[in-house]
Length: 296
Image (cartoon, rainbow, N blue to C red; front, side, top):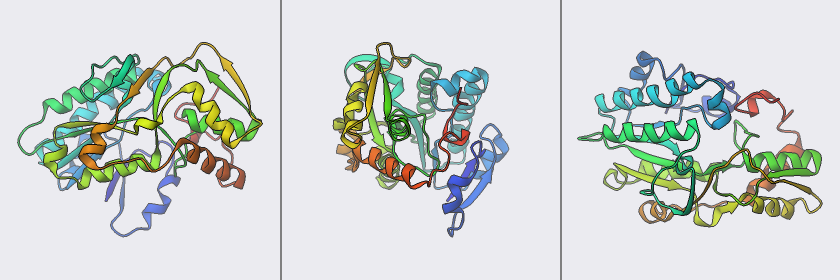
């Protein structure tokens, strides 16, 4: 397995992999087509995870965001098509649905409300337009991820709420009524593995919502899950949400086609993060490497 990464947040999260046989790390940028071509030309499969992720990170430098999340993304897909890479999997997001009522299926209309979401929609369209012959890409629309990971992120809602509950005994919920789907990071990884192992005829040219139906939550419900682990936590509710996304996602297709089922619940993620922070293994959770944008 080969990983191409700019290492924008350091390489500590890859330390457990670099000692493994068959693993190689290429430090480079997906905007450099020479590097991309060298990496993909003999590949059996390519998973494109690289992008600037989240509305705040994308809004810091819109030009860079367009360059990475759309222009370079399309170039990587075109390189894979040219070199006849058998499998190409693109990490998209449920943010493409934006604000909508009812259940969102893979063929539901898109209504992105941020630059991040709009570019993911455009990237999906550009990638699917390249389909044909041996190039049959797959789109994976990820739910909001939570849980413990080698490169921990404390700017994701479940992780952030857990951190504040541990450190301050208090959490703030913005809005509360808006719906959002969630998936544990390990279950997200499992989805990619299942997609790689599935017959190409089942996944080529397809999009999948990645998550589970029973982990669609209103943001206010997350506070009650936090209370299961922190009974004395103080909950402050701010009526207006800075993140207006509101959508309920159906994940029946990935279960039917890939036999995929999430194995972990939000409460499991809260418990593991709590234990890890309290053990001291995280170190200083305010370090910049744990956030996609600098903290104010």
